[in-house]
View 1 (cartoon, helix red, strand yellow):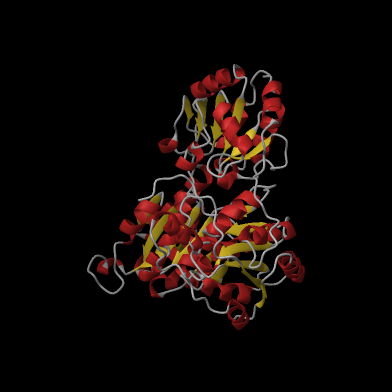
View 2 (tube, helix red, strand yellow; view 1 turned 120 degrees about the horizontal axis):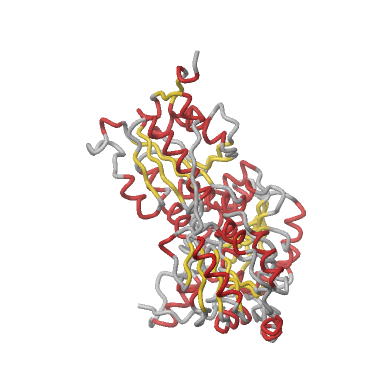
Length: 536
């Protein structure tokens, strides 16, 4: 019998393709229309992680991708299941996180007839994905999945959505399609490379701005070698922190809003900015002056500069590693006069604890851990106080910043790197957005430490109201007892009320190597210096 005579159910073919791609985890929640896929998955060596909400599944796949460096996978059923994924998929899209998103749908002959759970899923996903496909036949579904995987592995990164009607999942395809090789190539414009080299060679104050494209291209070592060989200082975007350890003499830290003095001085005074794998967000632009810009990115839509090169970061660095030696000695000496750290007072002794004191103690006690942040005031303190020594060791949704990201992202991070402890710093408001995922942490016995910065309010919103409106409204929180909540899930927990106790509690929790929650009561009136952005 020829291989072309062998057929396989579409659902089984999809799982087989994911196995061939060495996918180890899928984060999801089953439902009627996706059941053929789950039927195929039950005999697979891929572990399915049953999240308690589809938003959590998408955030967990996101966290897994950021820490592992591979694409994440999340799955949901039709209608409400699919739409519950959208928040997490949109979060991944804003930060260019590679993700395969698979949803089930009503049967093909019922599509568009307003039957139970029928909705235009692709219309919803299209603005928050690189592509959203409605699959009309099994051959198309198999090829679309293979092409999607190749595109996010070798091209522009981000989520790709595939929507499978239930009947299509049950139809059969030739086994040959599963093993068919799909090619995806990227090309570097050689004329752009030569122009970039000429500009760099004439530079006296060059500066590298590294984004997460360096991480997704697996080019961290290449970037470090290039920086060290030519003694060019490095700044980073938020999500690329750690591509060069922040204690390295050539690393100036993060640029832009909340950036270090050294990074923003360098950005304002450099004569050539080599921007690799990043986009110029409004927050990044705050730290950039009038330098000639060499911008390298696979996404042509974000390119902006004097020399624009649509390229993978690794391929660009391979080709540019031939410039004549430049002298940056005077430039580096000038930069030595500027601080590479953030000046934040943390030695408060007051009760209730100042949040920055509490967060500093958390970070001091968990230096070798992966730190996950959520959204809110605490995120700024983590940004300012955390020294990042390796890529993907500080995780936060920078582009979208949804409350509730942290807990499920910590789950994905823990599966991605079980050798590292994961420490989640989360506000009491954000924690309650996705706290149902405590069930996953307990069930899987994930050694995640959850540190709740509890000020019984939506702190950052309260501060905006104080600054711009006459009174506070709907920001006070009547919180549950988080200790009893954790215990209900079988998770050990304790409450901390005084400075100095946080470090001990974190140190003790990490020694236990099991799930743990610390409820840290902090001063609800302590705010941060808010950015000077327009507020309407």
